[in-house]
Image (cartoon, rainbow, N blue to C red; front, side, top):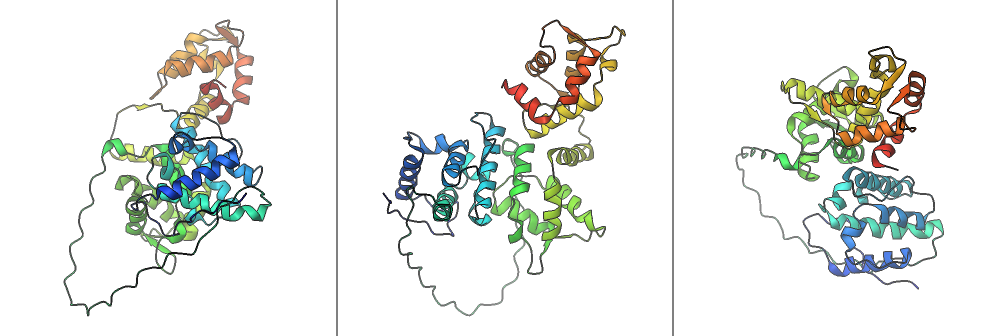
Length: 360
């Protein structure tokens, strides 16, 4: 049975009030496809799992490696998997959500628009379930004739408000934002983008509260790619840079910011992609069995392993240290041989370390 539902205007904005009829329609559509009932729709789809499952119903295999989790990083990762799946089935990037639209409820209208776009693509992949049908578009109001403009002096630009610390974007969210930034809509007609245009897109249009110094370091890192450093980047430069971007490189850039501000404050470990990458790299490259065996006993003791990790400049919680050691010392002997330790570290990867910390 096909549902007759209303479609939203493509140009809806985050400030436009939600049309509850549209919300109810999309909710009912998802309930039919996924064979379930929602009691708190926005909260239940917030972690991205339901959206990934919906895409897999439309086109099997579109989304993979998403996991149900209450951890912010995992939920945002699910939403990025969903975003990439939407792009892969042919939905224009401008109609696809970024994680903050749903997880932080910054633009629920965009979520609704995204779901209508998925429905519009479903027939292309042979989907036989319910679809959303588009009614006649609403007529747009005719603009009033503009009076002849009088010359006025240009106003002084208003200073941008200082971002509040509690709204700072963390490393994993910043990486996701940079990866999904609609760069094709930035800049001038010739494709050149100034720092002010880059900053405006991120802070004003996307509503992300990232301090100017962080954005300038990122912008300069892109600008130096052509060896010119002329204060402009191109869309092609941004694409080349962001395709190669990973959390480790971003971590280095943010580290430069901390050094530039002469901040001696210790970094605390947080469970996000940057934190896990840092810990995995440190274990594999900077924590050898010989280094941990000060008495040359031929064994790595749990106490030496734990002491080494807790003394890092990122304070690793004891709970994390205990989980890693339990994975290394599966015989619970309190010590392991050099060979066992080195073999474990050789096979260690970021994904495996993430699963160890989560307890999978």
